[in-house]
Image (tube, rainbow, N blue to C red):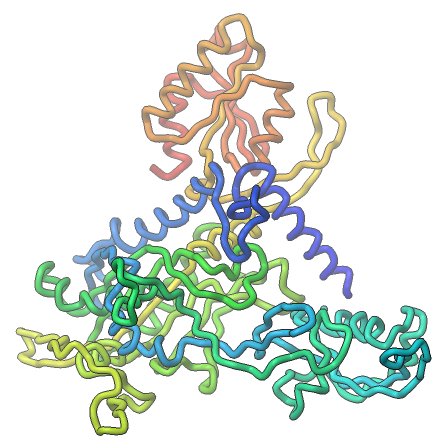
Length: 557
């Protein structure tokens, strides 16, 4: 493992520890041992994630100017919001393709009782001598054994993990690793013909893996008291379908004209087989999605526009452009509905060097979704799928979801561009990007390490902290008054009078507070306070009567 990878792993461990210590994130149901794939946001995490959602909504919807042509946009457009229900009619998921296609293949290990995603498993063919005891006897025999040693570790770590697993399987100490004869490079487990030759990641013998089987990722639930087959429903695996089925309602009630977008923020649920990497892959998560409806002839232009706009949104809030990539999907990667898809990906610390994890996908969905909900489930060539009786396999609503342009006197089914972002992944990326460690002088001038979250002021959970230098001489009363003014102005502030001033600064640095205001001995003489900047560490005197206005200005309000 490279030193850089070790440093990044250590950095990720530090971020996770900070999240727990300072109240950003907790394991769900932790006092009962936790539930894998579910997370709870603490007081600071709640504020941070809410700020991420608010920044997205403000930038995409509430401050959007539909009368002006934004930079690089083909023409002006409207943006409106929607909030659809988590449980929808089961037919929605049949027509969308989720019922038939939204699954992974999984395998179980009969020895460890663990379950694995088949497409994530990789391994190497290996051969070495192995000691075994005959059944019912203490006699030990030595034989040369060939096996496919598997691992679930990603990136660079897979070879190291496979080697450690092989040593354990063959009963060898680390210093005898050269006794293992490697017969192949790292291969996906799907490349081998016989799973009985594979050694599962936590198994001690071959042949413990079951045959792969489909595992639908939708959470199933029951409506009503009877609980029969007709009462089955699903928790939504995405928010997008709630927008598509309401397309006609929005057009008829809002008087919007194409092109326009419908935005939605909401919870989605996917029964991931192997949730991992903190909040990156969870079973319950929050999406920030836009379905942008446009004329088919203009859809390619809008696809390019949204790719660029969404990439720039992350950099505008503090993520360095060199830590992001915009990756266009290869043809074989495209989803069944996609004409083209590009992922905005971030270099998360838990990934190997040179690897990126998806933050947001921008998909050109064509007219697949609206047609599916009109006519029935479509195949990849946009033909209605028929059953053995020649009838639609999954019937559509039968409703007309086309759009009539009264100026051009033209009716058409709109194309859709979908920028789909993860609120949880975005929050995690902003945390990872903001986390830094440096050295700063303490109250006595001695250099000490400092942990700081350099969050963009719009995202910071606490915008300002107010300190009285000491607990007397009227300083607490003045500081409390400033604190109350901040709160009345809608500025989320903290009041802290415990400990040395340097220690209080470091506490605020660690949670990402951009500005600290200190009431000191000079305040009574000239009615000024000290304003300290988290990032530059510069301190300046400003009048008390202007402090709220100054903070609002620096927050961009």
